[in-house]
Length: 429
Image (tube, rainbow, N blue to C red):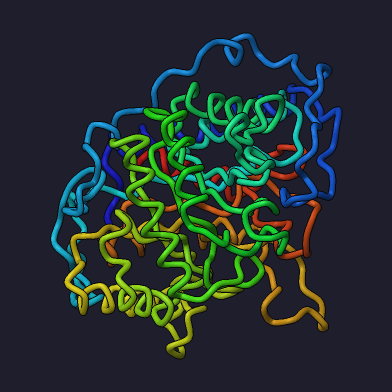
C-alpha cells in the first residue's frame, strides 16, 4: 500500500486528536454515582427506577425531540422495492472475493446496540450517548419491552398502556438519542402476560393482532423519530423467543401493515437471527414472509475468531456464511432487499482452560483490530449490507462474562481500545 495522501494524513491527525479529546473528556468527567443493577432488561427490570433524583439531566433533554435525521425518512415507506437506505447497487454475492469492487461504494452506516431501557441514571444515558456520537456512531438499536409499555390488557375504557412510567421512559430514551442526531431502530419484544396466558416474555402472543395493534400505536407515537421496527429479537433462539417459523411469520405479517399504518415512512425488519441462520430464514420465505418486511436482519457473530477466518463449515456461527442467506434470498427473487447486521462484535475478556468454546473472549487489541477488519470486509464483499450495529454500547454486569464484555465502553464509560480505534477509522470512512 502506498503512502497516504495529504488529505488522508490530515484526517488521521484530526481523528487522533479527537480520540485524545475523548479520553481527556472522560478523565475530567463525572464518575458514576450509581451502578447498574444486575437486571438484564427483562420482565424483572420493568420497575420504576428513574425517580426524581435522576432527573438532573441536561436541559436539552427536557425539550421536545426533533424528527429523526432524513437519510431514511425521506426515502418513503420502503415499498417492497426494498432499495438501499442510500445508494442502490447491484448484488455482488457471486463476485470473486479477490476482486475489490468496492471503490466509491458507500460504507455501511455504523451503529450500536444501546440498552437505554435498562437500569442507568439519566445523566449516565446522556453521557454515554454523547460519547457514542463522538466515536462516530450514526444510529442506535434500542430494545423496548412490550410488557413494560403495555403491561395491562386493553379494555374499552383502558388501552393498557403504562402512561405513568413505561411509555414516558421509552419517550425519553428515544428522544435523548434523536436529539443528538442519532437515528433510532426499535426492537419490540417481551410479550406481556395478558397477551399469551402468562407463559412468559419469550413466548409470542396468542393472537398476533394484539401485537399488531400495539406496534401500530407505538409507530404512530414515534413517527418521524423511529426509522425502523424490528419484530422481536432472535426468533430462532429460545433464549429470546419460543416459536415455530410459521408462528413467527404469522406475527411478522400481522405487524408489517400495522407499522406502516402507524408511520408510512418507517421500515419493518425481520427479527435479527442468532447467527446467519439460512435454514430458519429459508423456511420463513417458504411460509410467505417475503412481503412482510423491508430489511432482513441477522446477527453474524464469529466467536473468538478473526473476521478474516474463512468459514470452516456450513454452520450458522461462521459469519462469512452470510453468502448462504443471500443465496436463499436469490432463490426467492428477493435480492432487492437490503440486509442489516443488527448485532455483531467480539467480547474482550481473558479465557481459562475451562472456558467453554462458545464463551471464549479476545484481547482488547484483538477486539479493536477485528472491528475494523469486519467493517472493511463487509464493505468490500457484501454491498447489500447497509447498516451494522456493534453489540454493545458499554459493558454490563448482568450476564455471563462473555455477554458482559462486548461494550465499546466500560461499565464506568471509559473508552476501550475498540472505541478509540473505531473513532479514528470512522472519521475517515
